[in-house]
Image (tube, rainbow, N blue to C red; front, side, top):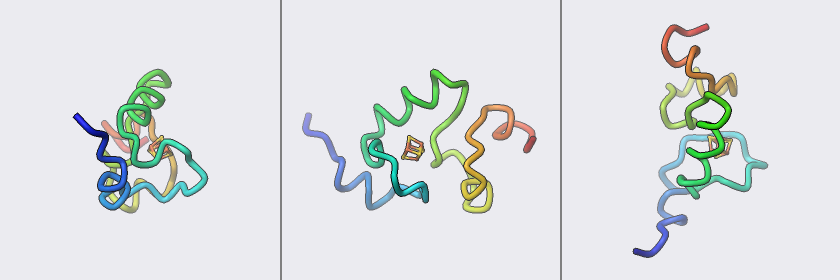
Length: 62
Ligand code: SF4
């Protein structure tokens, strides 16, 4: 299966522009998972802009 990086980039809500993982969802998920975090697409636009990707923030907003 071919990587859909260009399509993923189009759909990605992450506003952290310098990130080299943008659109490469497997690397994005792996990176955040190893830090007990979730990718930007789990968060609302308002939450995403805080750049707090922690599981705790996802679960209870802290
Ligand atoms: S969610 Fe994290 S790893 Fe994924 S594109 Fe945004 S900053 Fe990069």
